[in-house]
Image 1 (cartoon, rainbow, N blue to C red):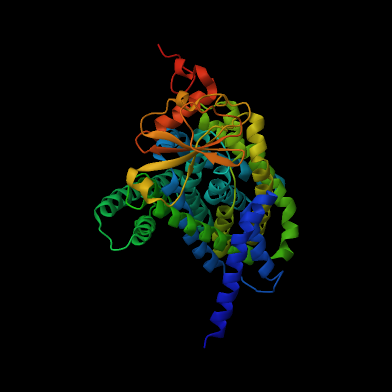
Image 2 (image 1 turned 90 degrees about the vertical axis):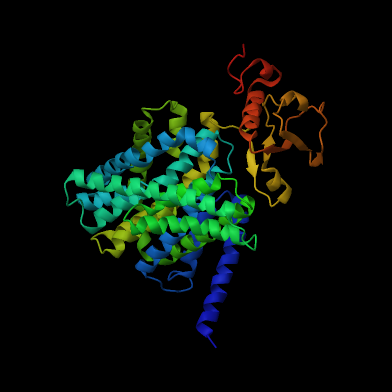
Amino acid sequence: MTPGLDIALLLGAAVLLVAVGAVRLSTRLGVPSLLVYLALGVAIGEGGLGIRFDDVELTRTLGFCALIVIIAEGGLTARWTTLRPVLGLASVLSTVGVIVSIVVVGVAVHLLLGLDWRLALLYGAVLSSTDAAAVFATLRRLRLPPRLVATLEAESGMNDAPVVLLVVLLSHRGFSHPWWYEVALVCYELGVGAAVGVGAGVAGTWALRRAALPSAGLYPIAAVGITVLAYAAGAVLHASGFLAVYVAGVLLGNARLSHRQAILGFADGLAWLAQIGLFVLLGLLASPGRLDAAVLPAVVAGLALVLLARPLSVAVSALPFRVGLREQAFLSWAGLRGAVPIVLATIPLSERVPGAERLFDVVFVLVVIFTLVQTGTLGSFARWLRVTAPAEAAEIHVETAPLERMRADLLQVEVPPGSRLAGVHVDELRLPLGASVTLVLRDGVGFVPAPDTRLKTGDSLLIVATAGVRDAAERRLRAVSRRGHLARWFGEYGDEVVN
């Protein structure tokens, strides 16, 4: 009855299943799965199967919808205890750091590529935003200190808001008003957006705690719906909807809600779907025949971004905070770009800004090249800088009603070579009441440990920790990983003597 729809569903389902299977393949090959999705889009586009797609407005609209879901998932899974200490640094990176990056890239491409100032600043603005999907997908696979991960994740969730505003301003008319007016406008949009997010998060938490919905499956839908409502409310008030989404997601994700694990699992699945659809769509929009001419400008702009703009923006933003040089170097290299810059490049393209087509091509090529280089070297770079935390506990999301009733989380801890956890007995961990080592995996065999079980290099521990003692348990594990048997004589972080 509807052959066109049937064919579209057949093709869409096939692409989705191939993309899901590509996640495992990309992990084995060490290639970011997001680039596989871009390649899928190019493969079915005009340079592959011959499907022609050039609807920039639709791409922009669907791209914004996908970013809402991705940012919401990032907020829902962010832990407030790790986010709070880095909120100041992340906020400065998302504002002052963005301005520094725009200016440096703009000056560089103006001088090196001969672009006029408006287009040069557009290059800087489009490229200044780190990508939430790329950051979340990459960093959560690495064992890094919570401070670094939280800073990068918070920055990626927050910097979309000011960047979108600046790209829209430059695309529509440039900065035609006095500078103080433009600054006031940005401050208004960010301030009201944050306030809307707080309101939506608080109201949503109150409603979900008191709602008696007839089905458990309705709670995840309602939670995600609240984050989307936050975006819409912010947009209606001419404020930053993206910031509202992230703030609402953080508040909801850190509230102890019924069916919390189901909410997080549902949001994670939606975010994957949004990432797949977004990258395939952007690959479909690209024209392979034009990309060759964009390689050299992409390399020039990318080197200016990675070697000049990003390190300088991190250095300036870190001045008021105690951030070591090694941490600054890692923050500079880990400022990953992904779908967000490509989506932002559709804004001047839809506004028919002169040079916007070349801008889109350059950003597309730059994202492919530098995502491949940066994500492929991020783990090695972290080890070289000695900012890794191999003994850091990683949360494992499982569907388990007993854990939810206990308000507990399941953590996994590895005992890597060189860790002082090796040789320590389980009872010497001295975990707080409410946290317990429930399983040890050794040489492929799992067993329930006794108090006198001695940990060995290569062991993997599963720890159940209630919400109230989770942070204390993680601090204790970090202390033992640093001091071993001597941890009892030092503070909870393993570096301060207890008197």
